[in-house]
Image 1 (cartoon, rainbow, N blue to C red):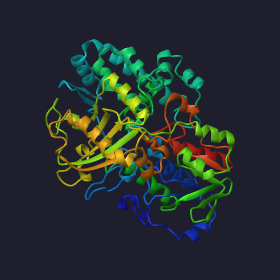
Image 2: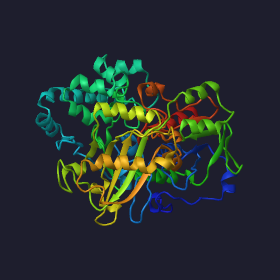
Image 3: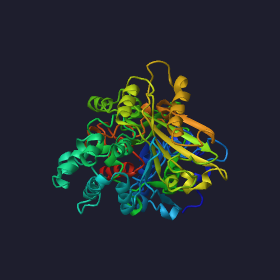
Image 4: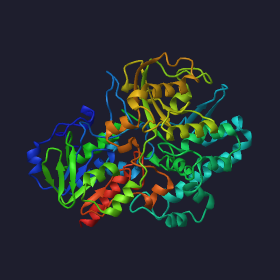
Length: 531
């Protein structure tokens, strides 16, 4: 490791300009990458390691984009947007020496905990035997259906990710026909990936309504769709297709927080020779020529790679855009419907269904469930520009695994919730933010004896706040929906019709979340063309 370059984590991703901008503008670059999110840094690392002269331009003061670290309150190190790691591609981690750089990951083996209003609860362990025992206790008639439900996910994951013909997340995006061929015509797998709603998926295998309630939210994570809409089953599958650290479908916590992933990628890129310049917003993409900065300076490169979302990239291209590509981007759904609430607390939530402050469920994800009627009403309200009466929330407790991120004796909880409006029929987020945050807290309070009294600090991020904080147009955490009509070969291609212009963000294959395969795929395509 080159010790002359300070580790990015030392400054929580806030970097000084490595050289005066006049000096950077005087150089000729092989590639300029717009945006130092994790995919942009991945692309930079691969290109730089291949000997390319790479410049990364980040508009914000901090690298990492939605996968970064901040200190919102003294003594707390918080991942403001990204929260768990489970889809990070193992090949990227291997090729870029993650473990040699101190990367540690804690699998959330306790799985998913769901408390119900009647005082009952469900713990869906990652261990198959423990989970089946819990299902037998909770819904004895559904043991066989539960096993079939999870066997289908496992078999489909194996067919797409672990097949002798290769991992379908790497390289050019496959078509539906290619995927169906890989699946051997398995009709249930095909329906799960392309047709079923989350409600249909659950109802096909499982009878118990409380089990439906427990899992319904897994079909709409980050997705502006109802769990009763066609294709939402694929959202659950997408979030179950990971193979991180050799553990299929497992999610977990990164030591230090999610931003450590981006910071390692930044270290790799810079040590390979890439230059990363923060506080440097790009005003225009000049296809085949480079970019123009907000202050009018031009930087020259035959290749420009945008890690920005497609709507932002479209604005940067201005008139220099192919009309067909413009229409494709404008048709790509990119309206966020999620709210992130970051909370500092004196102690973890004490759940009425399972009292205690250091229980197995504090090492799992926690969902506060909704009935099917509440799901339908909540989605309809958000679509009409109103807050719902009740929010679905998913809770994460980073400090259960890694107390170093908070002052001694304090806890951090991340709350991910849906649905909230992107824009309100009346008023705006400044008017409704506190009410929206209270709705998220209320969803937790009804299940806990010590909330909200233990809360010390609160940060509420609606879609416009996410857009402002990390530059994601529409506040969409995946740069666009991940439903079947926007996945696989329907996702935007890394190579655009504009000369020398590429994409490397979550809008490309294999989709949203912290995966990094998107950045690698773009780099491999650029290197193939430049041979």
